[in-house]
Amino acid sequence: MPPDKRILNAMKRSEVHRKEKRAKAQAKLKRRMETRKTEREDPEGDKAREARLAKNVPRTLDNARQFDAGSYLTADPTSAASLAARSRLMGKKKKVEVPVKSEGSGSEEDDDENGAGPGPSSAARMKKRQTDEDEDMEDNEGEADAEEGEQDGEDETSTKPSPFPTGPFSDEPPRILLTTSPHATQATHAFMGELRSVLPGGEVYKRLKGRGFEVGRIARWAAKREFKAMVIVNEDHKTPNAITVINLPAGPTAYFKLTSVVLGQQISGHARPSPHSPELILNNFSTLLGMNVGRLFGSLFPPMPQFRGRQVVTLHNQRDFLFFRRHRYMFASTEKARLQEIGPRFTLKLRWLRKGLPSVLAADGVAPRSGDKAESEDEEDADEDVEDADVDMERTDKPTVAGENEDDDDDEANANEEEIKGKKRKDMVNGVKIPALDEEQEYEWKWKPKMEVSRTTFFM
Image (cartoon, rainbow, N blue to C red; front, top):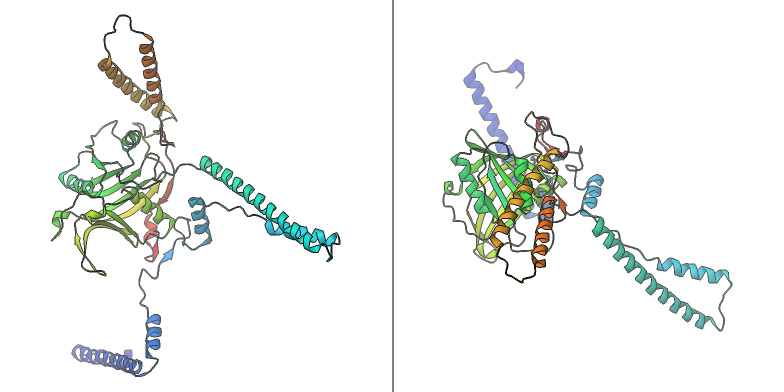
């Protein structure tokens, strides 16, 4: 309504506005009914309806997503930089091409240059040429196979072992160390118990406060005892607020913000969990950063689930929020299944992803000189190993019998000494080197407040 014709009376103005709004709604309804009638009566109405629905797609935050081109980790998966980085990480091997046709074409050109034309001996010459080409092809294939074998051997020796578990499937769940922040409250311990029921190989350890119980020391202690991962639940104001997931023995380390925690007993009509290994569904992880996070969570579960338990864990990524759910399913028919939630349910959001393991700083907040902390830790571990070896030797010592050969005792003593020396130098687990205690590596990705400016930019 123009300003000069604005109705001053509020009651009259509201009545006119209500009538105009109703008139617009009636016009829209009439237009929709006419379109529906036309599509129903027209023989090609189905095609018109499909075209109309394809054109009238509602604009949402999900379908209006914009990729962050600042890093190859968060770039568009179809871009050239992302594809190159993905192929480099996957370690694709180039196949050896056998130049058979070029050799054959070269020999024909040589024969043409030599003036070999059609004649009475052309059939014999063609037959001989064919046999020579077959022999050359077999030789080239043998050389190509040998080169491929050599390249495969070089790739296997030169490629660094992956920090994530690889190899044949196994029913044995990976060992996972579960712990909390120092002096955790009852709410955090209750949530830790729920995580213990979710992760089949989880082992809960109570964490004390003080020197020697830093996250970096605990991570290296767990790596030397062949734990595959470490999960730390942090709390604030007596409520769990963050989760740190560390892949062992060499990282990476991810820090997530934890919100909307609902335990299983708080869910109405919840099911009871069983000790079976659950199935894992990772949904909507598209970028390289998302795939790294997905593989990090995938390493917490055994590769081969136990389908008899009918349990499934879902980690759904939507707008960089990771929604965790656990259900038990039951097949109602060949096409439909029923779900019953087990719990817990919570939401995660990635704050940073870092290479390696957390480092341990000195008391004044300054990183110690390279090697000092690692050497002191190795010395402490060596002393503990020596004490353990002494105890074992005391338990296995027996009085010698007169006339028995003393060379066996010397061999056992030498074997024990070599074993102790081997434990002192133990910094490798399954071919992967454990980072030093003072080694602090770079961030692969880190969240910043300015990233929340755009509502359509997502990173995973």
